[in-house]
Image (cartoon, protein in one colour):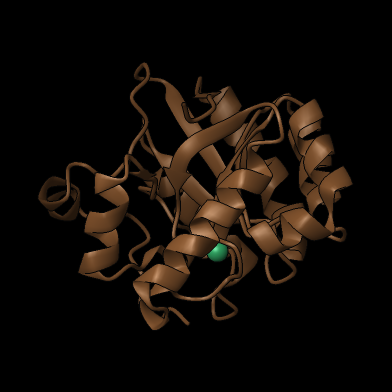
Length: 213
Ligand SMILES: [Zn+2]
């Protein structure tokens, strides 16, 4: 779906769209781990277990359709101190949807998520990070923050080895980064291997993991 992606979003792009949340706003040693596409009964428990081992809290951008199917998993994510936010209802590129249909799905997902504690209201990450101009303006006018990322190591990318992904994370991490990983079946076996190593690296380097607000 994504033929090309930046591992690190260039500064000029961040500068061109300053209203998008690219980076965290906290102190200089803070990182923000985010997981997209859950909940998933085969992958979410794996991610939760690794995060618990390292006492790291993260932000989960959830799909509305999966939230509806697996409410117990969402409860577990929340009970463990993580926060949840809106990744649309079904995982399709918003650019293929009419604005009305796309907006209805965001509202439907927002309503589902709002029944849980620790829901980040009106914070939306579009699938694949893509919107039309019209959708982008509409979301902004409606008071939504578009929450993207600074660092995407490509955990979904079958052309990359596990070591490549880990190297990207280790070499490119900078304070304030929002890091996007995936709570889905494409990424989980890779994350089982590299996420503990990365968390070990980041913690021993003095970084702290914070939640998006
Ligand atoms: Zn996604």
